[in-house]
Length: 227
Figure 1 (cartoon, one colour):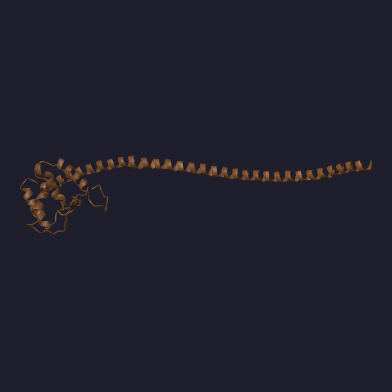
Figure 2: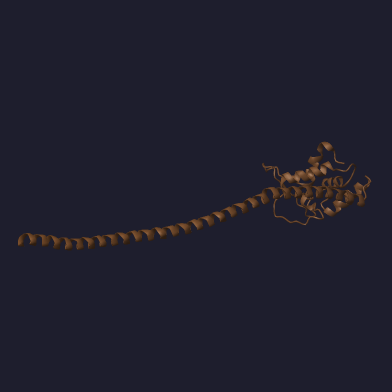
């Protein structure tokens, strides 16, 4: 078991390396090409057997730390996969060949009572820890989807329905306005027609009045002068 006081720092050094020149604290994965003494196993090599998702996103320091904390909390007592991995790393500058590093580290591990079966079993133990974190994360993610996405989707549908209803109201009002405009135009035309008819009627009356009035008035003058 890795010493508790330095456990997380050592775990982090086994799986990720912090770039000294990076002030943001971003972590980068180490290269694992065989024969490269400067390389170690990257965090991306820990693939849960059930998870097959592929991503082009960069690892998040926050989530990397979360996963390593889970491994830290579930660290098995005694010499296991983590100590074996630490031994491999300690041999980087001594044994350039990766395969030989694995063999040499295992020979040392055997002296600590670690068999191949126990080694693989302990590695699977950490995969199971990661699988548990994977499930917890996915459950939390689904919960957030339900709250933030589904809730907003329902809100979006309600808004869309309200917009449709308002559009129908607008169309109805537009139709009513058009009908009212036509009615107004018809009334105006009727008024104009009535004014014209009244004016014509008035003129006709005045003309008739003048004729009759003139004749009677003319007769009165004739009566006066002739009788």
